[in-house]
Image 1 (tube, rainbow, N blue to C red):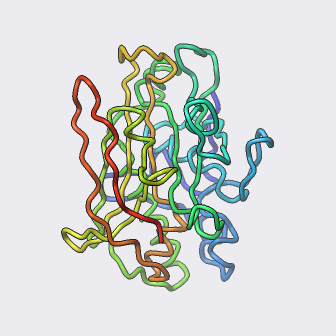
Image 2: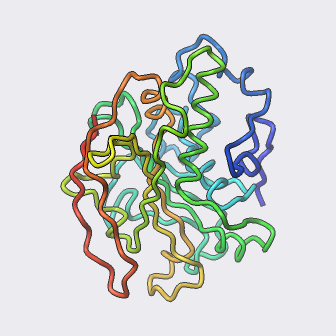
Length: 289
């Protein structure tokens, strides 16, 4: 079992509490309080490389889903995070990837997969949405022991942790976020089929994770989630025991909180019902800035 040393920045298995997270004093030493450009020193991710053929990405944020996995499953186990440079489809790229282990590969190490969408989808300036395929808390318990994970978190938990870490980083540099946590609506967009989770029609790629609601005028931060229990009778056994999240990137969150960008004005995202026969994907006309 690969257990992360929890002193490198802060303990992701303990930082997420009911009202926020605690951060160690090591944060400033790692650059949060320095005068360096925010984007130059990554964010809460460690800089390390694996599977070079897949990690065609800026090194500062390749481990985002590794940390997201620890939060969503309340686990201290470190996943082997694999970055996919293309969104793909059911036969290729990120969409075809699977979190491990599963009933097809039960002896694999804990493995997450990741894809990040940038501003304008082609200009690598600000990462907007990071999609993570992770294992569910009950699957981690099944493969690694009953004390290795626990329930109680979801994609919104991760987005709230991102807000808190970004906000703290700004305050350490003397910058006051223009939005307090209470000013933001954190939504968990529940989906019940892979096609619902991966669809972002009329666009391709992960969905928008921040928008100004045309209904209430508030900024909404969206965590789009697909949870499939480990004991599900879903016939594709490599797809059970998973927790998929589309999440706001810390860089995008920082750009919003600093006032450098304003999320697009959009109608609220469509709601899916948990029906025996999954509903077809529903278009959401919400564009990136």
